Length: 505
Ligand code: HEC
Ligand code: HEC
Image 1 (cartoon, rainbow, N blue to C red):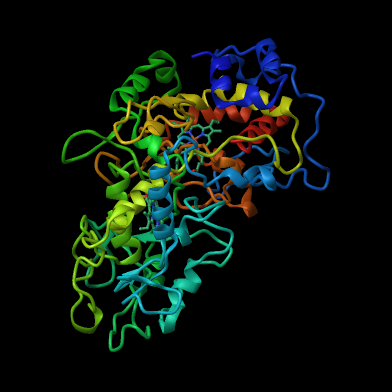
Image 2 (cartoon, helix red, strand yellow):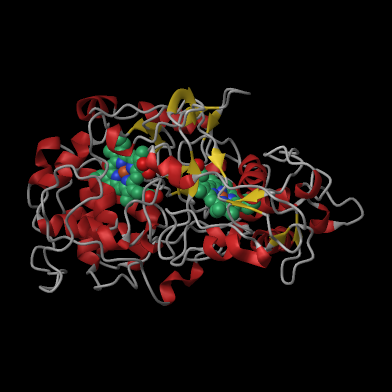
C-alpha cells in the first residue's frame, strides 16, 4: 500500500487541501539508511519555545537516551475532540437504541445491593477496582482510557468503605490495576511459582450496604517492597467493534508482509491464540482476550466484582455477610423486551462494538503545528518503519452483526500481534501465547487525546509523555530496537514532526 493511499484512507487529504500534493512531492524511500536524512520539509518551522527547550528528555527506564528538544505537544483540546465517543455514523435507529442502552449501563454506578443513592447497579464486590466501567474508561469520552483525576480514590472510599489507598495510586496518576507475577512463600519471600492474576485493590468492608462484612486488602506495600507487583492501565474501546471484526486471515496476511525488511530490523511478532478454539485473540495489553463480550464479562467480575452469565462465580470465594447476593448478579432480564431484555454484559458489548473509531484531526494540538509538519510526521512514521508493527490500516470482514462494521478500513495502527519488547517493558506475566516481555502492538488511533501511555502508564505528561513512550520501546531483547535506533537518528525537527503527527491521531 502506498503512503498516499494510506493518507487518503485516514482522511488527512480531506482535511488538508494541500496535504496530498505535499506528500506526493516528498521523498518516501523506505530504505533503512535513508531514515536519518533531512527530506527538506518543515525545516523552517519551530515548535519548541525557548522556555521549553531541553526539558523533555529523560525516559522513565534510566537507559541511555540522547537528549532532544522535541516535545510531546500534549493532548488535543477544544471543539475538535467532541466527536470522540460517538456511535458509528451508519447505525439503524434500532441499533442506535441498543447503543444508547449499552452506554447507560456502561456509566451506571454499581453498589452492593443496588440501593445506595445514585448507584442503582447491583453486585459490586466483595472485591473491586472501581464501581463503573465508565469511571476507568473515561478520557476523553465514555469508552476511553484513564482520566486526568484517578476515580479510584472516590470508589475505594465510597458509601462508608474503609479501604486504605494502596501506596502506588496517585490522584493525578493513571487508573491502575495490580497483578502479582509470582506467588509468595509462607516466609514472606517471592517464590518462582507463577501467580499472574489481578488482585483487586478494594473490598466492600465497612460499606453501609455490606453490614458485617470484614475482608482484608492484599498487602500492596509488601508486594512493592519485594518487587512482586506490576500494573496495567485501561485501554480505550473506541472502534473496538472494527477490531473485533478484522478477520484472522487479514492478521496473518499482514504478518507475512515485508518479511525481508522485518527480518533486517529484527521484528518478528505472532498472534496470541485462544486456547479454546485456536483463533486469534486481540483485546487487552497482551491480546489475551477473544471478544468484546468475553472482555465485558471478565471485566465486570474482575474490576467490579459483578458476577454474570459469562463469569458466574465470585472471585474470592466469599461467604456469609460478604456474599450478600445470589449469583450471577447480572442476568438476562426475562420479563423485559427490546434492549432492556439483555444482560448488562451483552449491553456493554453492543455499546463498545458500535463506538466509532476516534477521528484524526489537525485542530486543537497544543502549539498549533503546521499541516506540513504533521504530514511529514506521517511520512517519517513509515520511513523509520514504525509501521512494521503499527500497521496503519486493516480491513474488516463482511459482518452479519451490523452493516456499519462491514468491509471498513480500520485505521488502528496495529498489527494485533504480540512482540518481544525487552527487559525494560517486561512485566513477567504470561497470558496465553504472550510471554513475560510480549505485548500487543498498541493501537495508536485516538493517541492524540490520551494522557498516559504504555501498559503500566509509565509515560506521563510530567516525564515526557509520547516521547518517553517511544524511547521506552528500546531495551535489551526488544524487537523495536532497530526502529528506535532510526528514531534516535532523526533531527530534532523530524522528531517533532513525528510527535505532532501522533497527536493528530
Ligand atoms: C478499575 C478500572 C476498570 C474498570 C472499572 C473497567 N476496566 Fe476495562 N480495562 C481496564 C484495564 C486496566 C484494562 C487493560 C487490561 C489488560 O489488558 O490487562 C482494560 C481493558 C478493557 C478492554 C480491552 C480493550 C482493548 O482493545 O484492549 C475492554 C473491552 C474493557 N476493558 C471493557 C470494560 C468493561 C465493559 C467494563 C465494565 C464492566 C470495564 N472495562 C471496567 C480497567 C478497567
Ligand atoms: C516491534 C514492534 C514495534 C515497533 C517497531 C514500534 N512499536 Fe510502538 N508499540 C509496540 C508495542 C508492543 C507497544 C505496547 C508496549 C507496552 O505497553 O508495553 C507499543 C506502544 C506504543 C505507544 C504507546 C501507545 C499506548 O497505547 O500507550 C506509542 C506512542 C508507540 N508505540 C509509538 C511508536 C512509534 C512512533 C514507533 C516508531 C518510532 C513505534 N511505536 C515502533 C510495538 C512497536
